[in-house]
Length: 290
Image 1: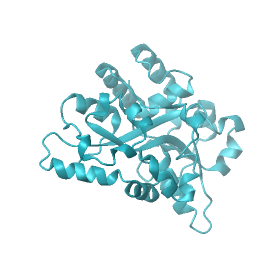
Image 2: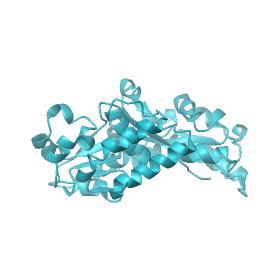
Image 3: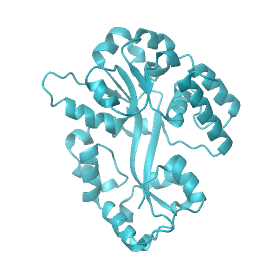
Image 4: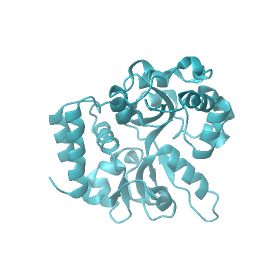
């Protein structure tokens, strides 16, 4: 069993015939899946034939509330402006700002910040976004995920882009350390991106029956709840909610309300040319090169 991300991996690999078809007759707990995620996955895997959505999360912002409250206007403290507004970033110079090392996460959230459609396939618009995004680049300390949450908790960084589950797990750990001031996690008011990791079976897998048994085990409510309770990452198994720790159930960065979910976008980029151009543009931003 492999666990690819819905976009771009499942979208590419299922179409290329790398996965075996899922035999739902062998999955007694398939009914536990939330139909919302099956519907969203249909974009990457039409008919949900080759992959099963399992864990999901949102791109969020973590920040040091003490530093931000002193430097950033209140109306921008719940916005992607914390990462993308050059005037805001100037006030944060030296305190440490990071972005994820993924062109989809950065470009598509930048589209949302600018009030643009993040699923617009126009290469012209993508170039405009790249040129505009470059204004923020001088103030970004680094791109990546390694130790970002830990450095935020240790006051080595002041604003970071990261996945809400990872930040929430780190925040819970730091809150147990005497003297540590907790950082804050927000989902920006403009909306954000959702990622979905799936379960799939390679086409040449030698033990397909056992693979289905393992998948069915993970689709049990008790099994899925244990995953979330340990790593603070939700699953698509809808019956887990009552089994989750209270602090996770009530965490709005992990489980936003229905109104906010309307502003959550699942990446969808169909053109290979667009994907390549986005990757090149992102590399140019990271390296300060054209």
